[in-house]
Structure formats: structure tokens, C-alpha cells
Image (cartoon, rainbow, N blue to C red):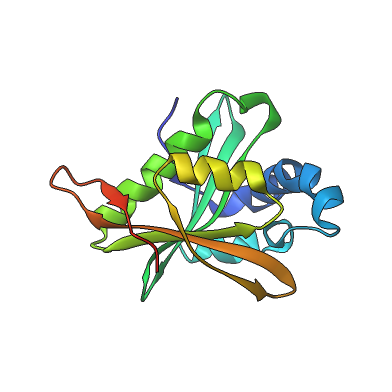
Length: 161
């Protein structure tokens, strides 16, 4: 797998298409488009928040991360259908975790829809713990975090909170 790199301005449309395709299967389950489907990827790219993985000129994965006062927010992880099951999603999450450490954050956090149970289970396997649930922008969200860097520079699970 190629390492993630910052998305370029000319990739905004391709990034949006990748995210829309990756999240499309969730629409029937949650009854509306998930938030990332309507995001402004040109703005995300301009802000330096969008990262991509490509192969032969095609985007296979995307990561949107954002520095916040409470840690690094993983706002979006998307993997193209043809790259699912290859470990790309886990690799993007590992990259986000390394970025959190590199940027000096004490924690990394994310949220997902409560009906996206496979995503919740994956994040738990990656060491994230649920911190709380709340409705936000009309979505029933599960908030999860991972904190306290270990000596080797990775983050270990929080005890919740």
C-alpha cells in the first residue's frame, strides 16, 4: 500500500466521489445520507485536512483529520469498494494515530452513527472506547476516543469518559 499523502486541489471531485460511493450503502440503514457525503472537500483540501491513498492514479482511500482542542478528530475514513478487505481502512486509522502523536495530541477521537455497528466494532478492535452518545446535526452519534501515548509513540485506549 502506498502511504497516505495530502490531497491536491484538483482531486476534490474525485475525493467527493470516493466518499459518496463508500458511504452509499449506509443510506438505507440510517435513512439519509451520512454527513461525509455532503462535506466540502475543496475546503477540506485547502485546510490541509484531507489525505488520500492512490494506485495508478485512482483514489482508493481517504482520511479527513482535524486538529481540535480535545485531540485529533478523525472526521472521515473512506475506502473504495475495490480496496475493501485489504487492510487499507486500518492503515488509514494507524496513519491518523501516528499523526495525532506527531502533532502532540494526547488523544484521537471520532464519531459514527449508532447504526453503523460494524464500524463501531472495528474502532473497538483498534482500541477506541465509547465516551458518550449524542444527537448531533440530526444524527444519533456514538463518540469514541483513544488516549495517552505509550512509550513507543502509539496511543492506548482510554478508560472512557
